[in-house]
Length: 186
Image (tube, rainbow, N blue to C red; front, side, top):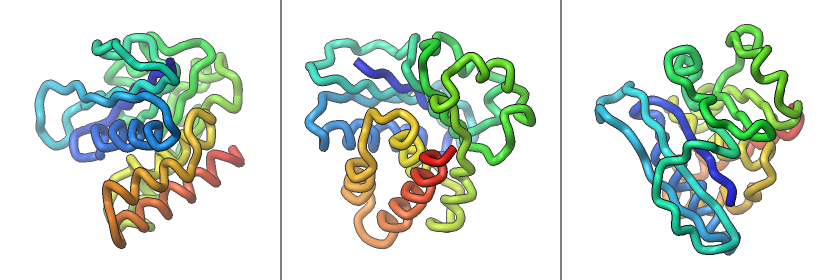
């Protein structure tokens, strides 16, 4: 089983991101589940969402305490919430930022992981460029597909198009595709 924990803030599409990831897994014939965890439902409040993927039926229903991958949609959470708690030592880290790991204050921590397992992508900027709104979730899923290999980009694109048909979906696919390219070359 592969488990992903997504950290962000209300209004960034954290819950939708996990849902899209689970749909992409279903498209590939996997079993998947996605569910959120949040206290205050206010815009800007910390939100966590989870996604599990497996070749077999998934019976677990509790929050993911030991993720195989982290998607961090808001880098301001890096020093206010223990986003790295329980992360598999061989896990993947994808951060929505154009700042270096040194600038983010996490260079020493991320140096422990295989180099190709850690990536930063300016997903908010990509979303603004393609979608016209600062919602980084779809772009980050493109980056996740590139670094983890757990899901293929065409499945991510199909999941986005199913959720957001028409121009909005195409704009999100374009953001995800650009993030995929950036993460593939990181």
